[in-house]
Image (cartoon, rainbow, N blue to C red):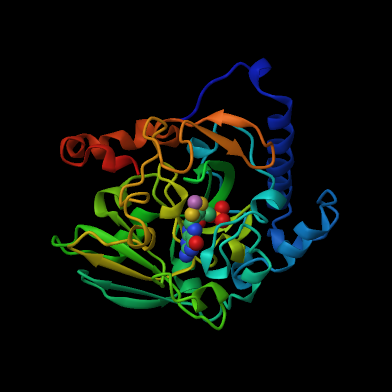
Length: 333
Ligand SMILES: Nc1nc2c(c(=O)[nH]1)N[C@H]1C(S)=C(S)[C@@H](COP(=O)(O)O)O[C@H]1N2
Ligand SMILES: [Mo]
């Protein structure tokens, strides 16, 4: 586990403050029995920058507000570094459907979340189409604090809410022929201006193996910072695979297919040499455009060493032991 038991004197002042603010607000919300939405702008919160308040007002699937904050998974609450401020993490995003720059959070508010249907198909016993809210309400929600590492060398630490991906596999009941899961993002150029440019192979697609999906860290995200998932984070459903580069964390997906063949992802279609299928974080495998041995922490703007499997080697290294001989460096890009 990533938990590094540091002596308290080694914990930086910054970290203590940021985590205390979030975790305190969280326990206040819980004690009062109310979700974050009902106190947005209320007296329990410290004053926030205007742009962050606007982001809050547009937060995700409002009808699920009663589900947050979800119970914190105590085993996955320690990321070894401070949480990134919500106002920072929600205003610096990759979501190419809304533009190829990092300031897409306003444009992403055009996303229509209700209705939002998710299709589960392919090699499964129970193909189904299910509404996002119905799916979320069926699942055991919890909160986990995860590190996030983009291949572009920026990083953050976010309290996500959601459910373990293995729960979704259980629901779908794949047949023994299924080896991979393919995820697909919505496609609607009227809502997403980035999709009006035909040089990208829309819709965004990502894939993982069933073994990866069954790993305890594979997580379907439905919320962040104790509230329904912000649109710019990929509401109403996105992935968090904290040992993999950020582009694997597909946002706003509408389709989950269980398949026998390895899916070709969006970025792999664009540039297979730079963005492979596995994309496991490895500081020792260089990328042609960004250094992978260190990362820039959003907000703090400090540079920290990048860790093998982004700090999650203990949980995931075993998934790749048998693949090292055949896949080699392809496992890490
Ligand atoms: N559909 C979709 N999902 C996506 C992307 C995207 O452009 N479209 N960008 C990916 C990349 S490169 C990263 S680093 C993360 C960024 O997540 P964040 O904006 O929540 O930090 O989302 C990933 N998921
Ligand atoms: Mo990324």
